Length: 100
Image (cartoon, rainbow, N blue to C red; front, side):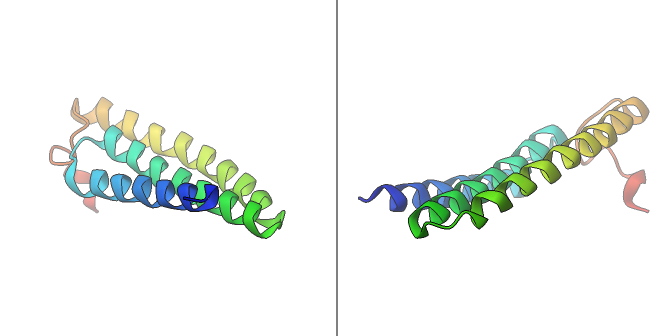
C-alpha cells in the first residue's frame, strides 16, 4: 500500500469513528472530542493529498482550519461549562432548555 493511500484510509477510518461517536454518544465532551477528531481526519486527508500532488495550498488551508478549530474549541468548551454550571450534567439528554 502506498503511503498516500495509507493516510487516506486512516483519514477515512478516523472520520468514520468520529461520526459514530457523534451519533452514538450522549456526553457533550465526548461528542465535542469526536467533532475535533473529524476535523483532524479531514486535515490529515488534505495534507496527504497536498503532498501527493505537490501543492502547498492544501497545507495552508489546513493551517486556517486548525485556527478556526481552536476558536471553535474555546467557544464549545465555554458552552459546555455554562451548561454544566446550570444543569450539573454534561449529558445531552439532561440539557433540554437550550433547544430554544
